[in-house]
Structures are given as structure tokens and as C-alpha cells.
Picture (tube, rainbow, N blue to C red):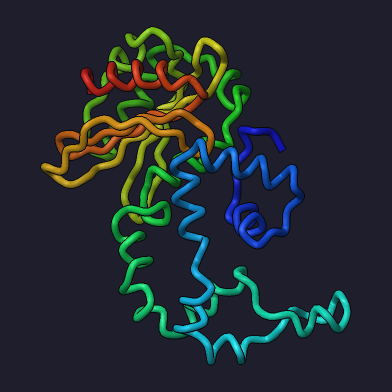
Length: 251
């Protein structure tokens, strides 16, 4: 696995449970220390053992052990962190999540933050995802008009191509929790895939531009005039910030 590969929840829970090699543990620790979004994900997964036992002690005692596939010792092993989400969902989750953990998700933690989903999706892109696309400006403009109309925002092709450092490739319609989300895809001069994603937000909920590493990728996000934006991709934060400033000024 390369240093740019996505860390799944399974990877992070294995790290928390001490089920990875020493070398893998050092790699994950370094990536988490350098990526605030991964830090949030790790914190969300690192449910306190005492809290779980206090809230769900009886349920944990009744929980079945692992299937008898690895011998009798596996059958009697105590429940691990990996079965906690299902236990929580099947019992008094509402009372527990009314506290700190619920506040984390309600306040825009990675489970509810559309930008987190965008980052996970963008982490799957490679240069060859887009490099084969070679279409006329007329085709790009027609596609862009259809895609932009889904969120009710006019976006001129010139606004995307005038930035200079990015080669605009395509537009597509995605979605998040029933709301349309559009993705405008680019390649950098180094052949790195980037995406400018836009979703309709709440009127008056403007946010100043902020920069962060997400899923090992450079990102800049902001909100203005009822729309929220994120530009993400590559590892050159300065270049992403510069391009984001351009898009913030023209869109």
C-alpha cells in the first residue's frame, strides 16, 4: 500500500486494537499526525472502553464470541471494538449518543460532512482516470451547463479554464444525502487529478476559506452565497490554495 492509499475504518480499528505490524503502525501514526481529517476519524473510532461497558455492560456480556473457525480460544474471546457499532445500534444508542459522541457527528464530523465523502472518493482517482479524456470546448460547455443546472448555478467554461495551472476535463453529477453535488474534474500540469466539488448550502452560511490535508490530499474549502465548495487533489497545498482563490473569485 502506498503512502497515498486511503486508510479505511478497518485499517484504523486494526491500528487501535494493536492488530497491525510495527512498521504498519508507524506508517498509520505518521499519516494520522499529518492529516487532521484522519485524526477526526481515529478519534471517532477510538470509543472509550469504559464508556461502552458502562452503557452496554449487560449487552456485551450477552454478545456472542467469534465463530468457531480458529479453534476453541476464538469462541471465548471477548467482544472487540469491531462489534461495538452493531451493539450500539441495537440497544440504547440514543442515550449514549446524546452526549459527546453525538455532538461530534452532529457538528460536522466525518460521518456527516460531505467533504469527507468527497475526499474518500477523490483518493481513488489516479492520473489515468482523466488523462484519456480529450473533448472539444463545445462538448465541455454543453456538459457543464447540464451539470451546473442541477444545483441551480451558472458556471462558465471560461471560469474553469482561465485559472491556468489546471486542465479542465469533465463535469459529473453526484449526490449526498438526497442533495445534488457536482464534481468538476481537472488534471494538474504534473498529471495529478483534482476535483472542484460544489453543493447547495444554507443561505447566509458563508465560511472563509480553510486549508487541510484530507485522505493524504491537499484541500481548500469555503462557502458563499448559498453554495459550499471544496477543491481537493494532489499534495501541493500552495497550488491548491492558489487555484481555490481563483475559483472563489470567479464562481
